[in-house]
Structures are given as C-alpha cells and as structure tokens.
Image (cartoon, rainbow, N blue to C red; front, side, top):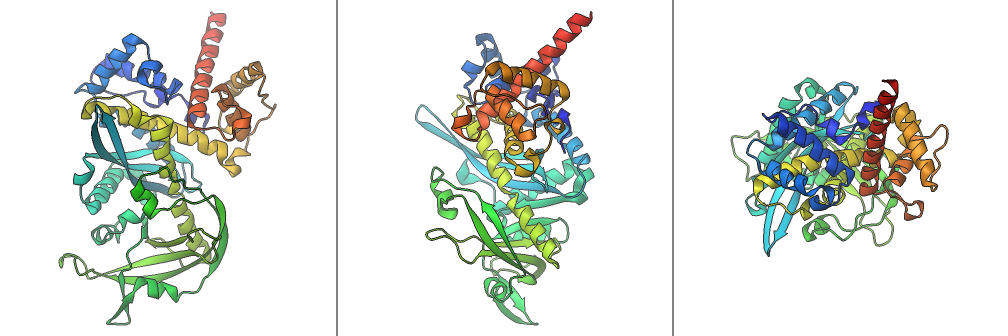
Amino acid sequence: MLDPLFLQSAANEVAGVQLGDARLNRRYAKFMARMSDAPAETFPKAMEADELEAFYRFASSDRVTPGRLFQPHFEATAKRMEGTPGTILAIHDTTDFTFSADGIRDNFHGHFSIAATTERLVLGILNLRCRRGLATAEKGSARWIKAIDQVEERFGAARARLLHVMDRESDDWTFFCYLVGHRRFIARGYRDRSVLLGEAAREKLEVALGRAQAVGRRSVSINARGKARPAKDVKVHPARKERMAHLSASSATVTLLRPKHASKEQPEQLTVKVVRVWEAHPPSGEKPVCWTLITTEPVETVEQLWAVVDAYRARWLIEEFNKALKTGTGYEKRQLEGVRSRLNTLAMLSVLAWKLLLLRGMARDEEKSSEPASKLLSPVQLKVLRIRAKEMRNYRLPAQPTIREAMLAVAAVGGHLKHNGEPGWQTLGAGLEKLLTLTQGWYLAKADLEM
C-alpha cells in the first residue's frame, strides 16, 4: 500500500532538480506548485503577471531540457519501484499532440512509458520520447526498441522484474526478434502470422489458435469508449458502452515463421507463448472482445494464463494517463511558441498528469478504496481535510474514513459536487493541492506557536 509521502505536492516530487542555476531550480518548484493549484487553467490564469513572463523564459531556456526536468521524478519513481515487490509493469504507448495557432497546425507524437504494479497502482513515468511531425515519425520497431532500451538502462536495478506491455502497434517482426530471449513482454498481436505445423508445413496463427479449447472463463468489466476521438482511433477501436464481458481464454506455444518481407539476416523462427481471449456472446450491436496476446510469460496453468490477461488489461492505465495529460492539464490548448517550450512544458505537465491519474485511480478502485485512508494520507493531512470538509458543510468526513471517502472529500475541497457523479481530473488535482497547501500552513502555524 502507499506511503503517505506518495502524496507530497507536485513541487516536492521534482525537488532536487539540477538545472545548473539555483534560481531556475527554485522557479521550477514554484511553477509546478502554481500549475498544480489549477491544472487545467491557462497559464495567464494560473500565474501572476510577473510569474507568467518568467515562466515563458524558463520554458524556452536552453538550460532547461525535458531530461533534466524529469530526472527527480525518475529518481522518485525508482524508489517507489524498489519498495514494490514482484513484477512491475512497464506500459508503453504513443499519443499524438496537435497545436493550432494563427491557422498553422504543428504536430508531434510522444511515446510514453509508465510503471505500474500488477494491482494497477501507477508508480510514475519511466520514459518519454518525442518526435516532431507525424508523417515523418521513426519506424515503429525502432521507436519501441529505443524506448525499452532507455527504460531498462535508466531503471536497471529493476530490470529482471520489468514486464513490458504494449498494444497492437507493437506487432512487428523486427521488434519481436529484439524481445524474444532478452526481455519479458506481452504484446497484442493483430497480424495473422504464419506458424510452423509439424516439421515443414505452415498454417495461419488464427487457425491454430481456433483449435485450442477454452481452459478458463471469467467476467470482467469493459470500459466505455466514446466517439470524440481521432477518426483513425475510432476505426481501430470503435465506440462502445461500459459493460460486463464474459470472456473465454486459451493458450498455446507456437513457432512464428519469418515474414517474406523481413530481412534474411533475421531469425527464421521465433517460439513464443500465445493467449487467445474472446467474447463468445457479446450484447447485440457490440463488437466482441477478441485479443491475441503474444508473450514470454508462462501460460501452462489457468492462473498463469489469467495473469497474462490481467497484465494486458492494465494497459488501459496509459490511455488514462494520456487523458489526464490532454484533458486534466489541457496541454494541447496551451499557448506555447517553439518546440523547446512545448517539450519542456510537456515534461512538467506529465508529472502533474501522473499525480492526477494516481488520485483518480485510488478514488475509483473498489478494492483499494475500501481500505483505511490512513494508508494514503498522513494523520495531519486527514485532520486538516476533516476540518476543511466540515467548513464546506456539503461534506462530512467520517471518524475513520476509507480511501474513497477521503478522496471524495479531497475532490469536494477542489469544487466537486456529489450530484455531479464521479470526480474528474481537475477537481481531484485542485483539491489535493489545496489540501497540501493547508497542511503546510498548519505546520507553519504550529512552528510559530512553539517559538
């Protein structure tokens, strides 16, 4: 479970940054605090006039780089990983960013890697690679390989425990050649590859998997997907309603054969484990769930099979991270000029997005949300939260609150109203920063009284 220090302010999360100038270091912490107070607000609204000018100079400074801005967060993430036993999921995904100003559109993509436990607690950001211009993006296999190499180099102490999880975009022969025998991974396949049948015959993977009998069945909750997404995303992943899906699963060990277009210098065969998951009877009008998961993980038992499925299902965390970044912090709506300013601001807001994702996940996770809030907030934070919630009259915190009750109180401090449903990114983020500010004030007042 979480150490209360997990919920230090975003400014403390980046403490220890080294930008080569003490003034820049102090400004970074100050700017993070300002943005945390109102994560979705524009910079002019979140900052004072003199701060705003200083922020733009900071973001465009050649002494400020995404790598330097991320470094203290990477170090904090490494410590959280050290304190987490067992497998750590390294979840990878690419998202597109579009800026529009004066009728000119500027595009680039960011390839993020985040760390999570198998219980879906997001530990932090592992890596970010950016490339400008969507049409000239580097070849898919190179992007995935470089990202994983950078993660394993940066977090080498946890290398043996890292399990890389990726969506269908990673289904690439060159990438699989790099992974098999060297990295633990789960990748969703979408190509109907050729597999070896007997000593010489070939058949298609889909045919081979179709013969495997279901060895496990389970009902799982499927998240809703809306239509308000890029057309290419909707085409691959159509809109759907939230529902319980009744899934069947089977597994097999197969030998994939090298595609005809692949380099003859690459291996002719790769032996991998494959898990097939399907929904035999979807609701009327809904596209059935159907996943082919290619992995190095053991799948000999039913428990091992479902462990692979559950690890892949945790991939949705990075989709939620992208939402937190785009919706929770309003990154694409920021008025920023120049590539340097946009990338530096992306690094800053990414740390904020992680914090928002962590909070909302704790508030909505049924298993964790029923645990005592004392596992998430310190005694002083709970005391301050109880007083503030009582002052607001619309929320009374119980004497022994659960995590969910505490998070709803935090959201209320941020402006959330009960009748508006589940709290969103902005209210949780704003409420947390207000709580941390009030707690800091409590400590200062206590120190004054003791003098």
